[in-house]
Amino acid sequence: MKRDFTAPDDYFSQLPSELADAVCKFLKLRDIASLRLVSGYCHDAATPYLVPTVHLLFNDSDMRRLRAISEHPVISQHVTGLYYEPDILIYYKCYSDWERYIEDDDYEGDMPFAPPPEQSTARDLRIYHRERKKWEQRPRHHFKRTFLNDAYEKHIKIAFEQRALRGLSYGASFLVEAMRRLPKLTSVRICPANHIDNASNRLKEAYGPTLVKQLRTNDGTTYAVLEAAWSLLVGANRGDRELDALQIQDVDWKFLLAPEKYWNRIKLSFRHLTSLDLILNSYFFDVDKCREKIESGLLHELLCSAPNLRELMLKFEPMIDEYNAYLPHVFRNSTWTSLQRLGIEFVATSAQGWLDFLTRHSSTMRCICIRTMELTTGTWLDILETMQKILNLDLAYFLGELIGFDLEELWDLEPDTDQDGNQDQDPRSPASIAISDYLIRGGICPLRELDKYFPSES
Image 1 (cartoon, rainbow, N blue to C red):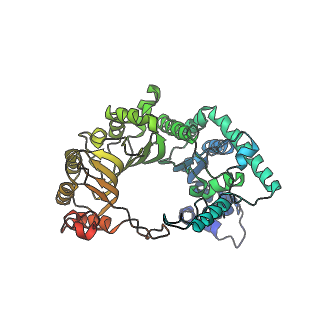
Image 2: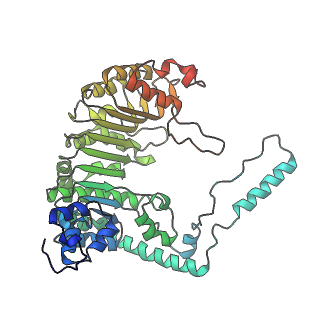
Image 3: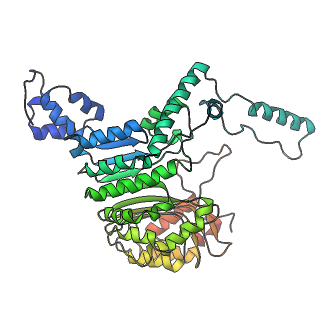
């Protein structure tokens, strides 16, 4: 770094470059931005730490910002992560349609009182229906008209920007080119919020002024996630990026149907992954097609492209009582020799297929998290007792439901709620905690003590 004239009290500029780098690593981003303005030396020392992770939203200004960062001769060389929230505002055709969905923070979506008992008097029923009608007709918000007009203009501006990007393959060219110009990028996260309350502060600041809270639409965010996943992974391969961690949430199962010209590049972009978090979604009319493509081996083929995985999280969004994935079709007979952490949500499996997979990974597996798994053969008692014998776990989480092949074998592991619908701080029920402790420490399997852990089932 080049030194220039510094003020007598500018002690930072008198530090050796190695110490200046060490200090910058522990500064917050706003302090980094301020430090760059102190002197030329401080500018050179702080700039590499200005944008360690690019936070991207689905709008024109963010796409151009991504391009500017990727073309910057210094900043681009130090970006290691990309966090993308590809949420799309629901487009309303007119002002009245938009206002119909506007709510202020005090508006309650659920009725604050329960229906009267069946044997209530006629007077009690009249009171209930009168109060219910008053509640249903209460105002959704108390905003002034000038405030609403301003919010609607902001909504229209962003909605039209996003509409233009959707016409450009959801900004695919921006994403591909940026990936090629960020040589140290190792982590990519694509995480739609779907609702303003679940969004990051940056997304809230950008879209909150539109007053629209519901963000996701089937023909909007879904395809934005799909196109983003394809584009970023193709760009990673073209730029020879060595991705270490990849998270793709709520992506349509058609992700597995990438055009042939993309599919091989996507698989190649997986070759250095050590951490993969993937949530595949489908809709009611797509469940059979999704299951068929997974059965054909497309997902297995993709996972095998990441032989060095240490952490794997797979979630298949459930459609009523149907499951999109049958686990033996996902893993087949493959082994990931470094796999230590496994998370699975909403799948069906045969007892033997699940135990064979665990046996192949028993020497490395240290953490398992299961949420709702259905057996097509075998019993959960046999599976849990076999798992305890073959695995040496440090952590284990069983949540949701354990559904057996026998219709009578259904173990609910969700925690109890109080009268107000609140749960305890621990998201696990006593039965869930007992199963986890059993798998780690041994003892008596909780499914042999039904009176203690499942009194309603015994």
